[in-house]
Length: 358
Image 1 (tube, rainbow, N blue to C red):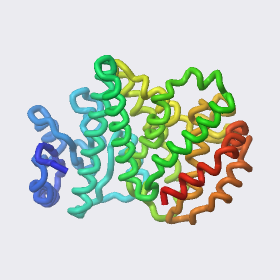
Image 2: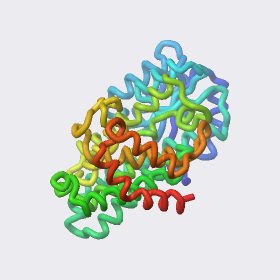
Image 3: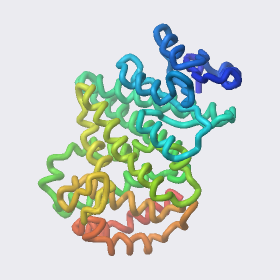
Image 4: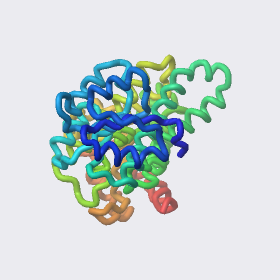
């Protein structure tokens, strides 16, 4: 990636850390060292960085206090912040994420890890800016060249989806497969005139592409949890669950700033409801039955099936038969019973998609 145009402010009260960090970064970025939070805000009067590396434990104004001030200022609130810390406890990390930090980097620095974490966050910021710019200009572009707009929309969605999978080492191909599972379910619903009234109101050319964003909130989950090699603890799972609200917030923010956001309507519903359960025991809202948007009920089956047939560090891959049995037995608890009947009609297509992606 071409990083020559990116500017980074490195904030640390330890001179040794400043020098080490500057030396690691300066071959790739414009680096401005700042020995305190006060100096950071002085620099921001004249510099607009692409990212801030912010030490937590500093005198006078800590990193936590500094990020609060950054996020409260409209001029700086969108600048990505990565915390620098020697702390490894979960509460400190969670506090930082609650305040708006994008990631954590442990000190002393590992040069390859530092550079990769920065590259990831800059890629995320670029993708978000591209998606917002696209949304702002969508209406005019549709009027001028509908076909080109659709191509661009899909390219942006695919880029963001690819970025999510790039961060998650364990879910390769998941986004593409779930989109194809959704397509099979939807085509069978239409063929059988099931949920006809609801589906008739959908903009079909946007529905399936928007499904690619269902896990977009995972870009805010730390690598320590997202790529953990063992089963998550209850506390870690609670953090993982926040990806739903993070994803919804990101999509809602784009929608609030865009003149045209039809293509994000389905993405918002799918992102927010695909972890709800038919019996009301899902998250984040504990919706039950028909209160769960149909888009989310469809994605729930696609998402769970793909998780079951995929290998993870903490579990083996289930066979298609095992996955199908689990979904069938979960009708009325996890899944909409009507949609489970539809799944039974098209499960051969699910198996084909899963087999051909291997």
